[in-house]
Length: 213
Image: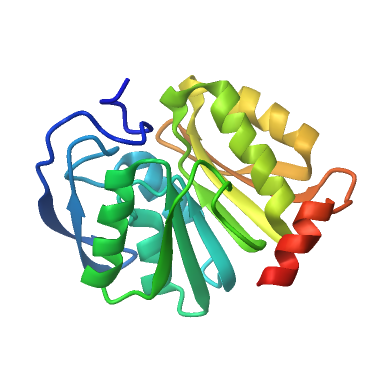
């Protein structure tokens, strides 16, 4: 289990590699490593998700389960009004994300966090390429936590491969959010956008977190 990308401390030996690429029409460079998802390349799911995201993201944006920080770094680089926060349970991923923000001249915060446990405040947008191999109970918990921590007009965007449960995830998300729909279907991947927590009531903890921002 320690060799899985969603482990806190990867068991594999560190072998960092840098690669250069073009994302959203911008030349960027990234460091990746063993024990972190998608070493040495941008996975198709993340590319599909980035393509589907609105170009006018603004406010506080969370890259949830950030891996080596691709999505948060790209948002911070290409959406100038976004204040990016990145988090992951994987210690090596957190180190890489900080390095990649600096490598690309992006200001942002990075936290070692199992979901939202180490995060404060609410978010205007939460974006995630969820850790499918961690299991449905884990990723559905992350979706529920995201609903609790979005601002009143906030949105969650996520990508899931159809054969890995996109349809069932969409059904679940429609029990958590008042609106959840697939906004992009490409190459076997679904990008799902969600808004409006069902019930519409903010918890005491959510209100307290809003006061801290």
